[in-house]
Length: 98
Figure 1: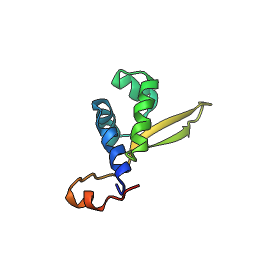
Figure 2: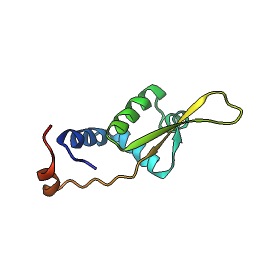
Figure 3: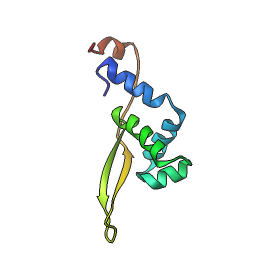
């Protein structure tokens, strides 16, 4: 998954916040509609979007817009992507400089 130093830093930054780790844990269990997730976490949607953007840039989550019958508005759902993070000496030796 991680091939460059910059990618490793993005993952580290994404996981360096306890709220983002809670979000990621919840998204590993099931996919969530943004409004429901913000309500469950007790934070604003705007703040949630900032956290989700950071997780998305790190390649840990993905989103999908959906139209549901009877609702003219598209809803954005998020879910965790499959990932495995192992940071060891071998990985660090293989990272590419950018």
